[in-house]
Image (tube, rainbow, N blue to C red):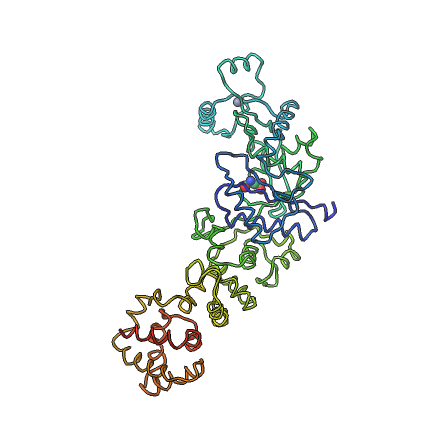
Length: 494
Ligand code: GLU
Ligand code: ZN
């Protein structure tokens, strides 16, 4: 196989909101395709009408678009192996046709066992210390037995007839893996109501779409022997071209306290990263580190650099720990790479959502943002943090509030002479710029009142910015303007 023949797929089911585990899988497949000059196929596995939703489908497309993980074949892009939504393929009869051919070829059979019967036999098998999986009960029913079941009104499922062999593959990440024959019982391909299951549709589409490499989460490892077996049958009935994809299973992503990151953990929600103002570059960079390393301790890179370097040898077998602090820190590094004007534009939607600027912003708001960005760029880890850092410079006076805890701690009785001296100093300072403001406040508070800088500037900072932590004080005062600064200082005195 030449490199350019590589075809990988990202094939999520559109249930609920996209999560970071999914995005990691998409990223690794994308990087592998780009590294090899292959094809990145995006397929939607939406055959479960009870759980899938159009909203979730839209969210998946929006997520990949926002991240810049462009797909070569898939929804809205098309391609030679479409359609790329399984719900459409199902309506077209793709899976019913393959199921019928598997039945005709003897690779699958109808199973009439009821759930209660299956449960009872499973319990008995476990009591007798036999393998608990399906026991092959319906593998060779006589015509009379079938007729009797039909007469009872039973509708059969379609079950795959597992060949009686062990299953071994050389995993692209984990090396050789073997499942013993009795670990992989005959499994259901189509429900009694005719709905095809993941066990059928996923390998069928991988075969029909000529997928060469399956890179997916380790949670799916136990389905691989079944897929290998099904692939064998698909080759015999002419659905596959005879090649079986190579499988590579990406390590688990662990959350807090040594358990797998779950969809319920807030940091697993992809939307959270957009809401809080992560950059696509930052999120992708962090997710790349979940199970892959560039080497040479390099942890800061773009997705293009990742693609350039991406080989499966560097995918780890060990579980990866999700570390939100590190993710934030990397995002902060990406924020620092932005041109200040660009950063100013990117924070506007967050400021608007918090209602501290109008949409579109006014010229005066633009002036404040442009002046404030250099003061916060070093400290921002997410775009959303800009609201807390510069909101006080933008918010209308009638909505300006001092944080209660900070006021209680800093705006005490001892602060009164400090604030009075600051008002007097700032009324007179000329010109109104950071250097002159600093000079006059130092003269008034440190030289004049004999205070330490922290005691001197703390009350001024809280009175003017509303918080104990703010961007540099003198620059902030310059941006805020004399009038507003004095209003707030007098407000604090009241
Ligand atoms: N639709 C499956 C899932 O989201 C795909 C699994 C696979 O990659 O084979 O879990
Ligand atoms: Zn049966």
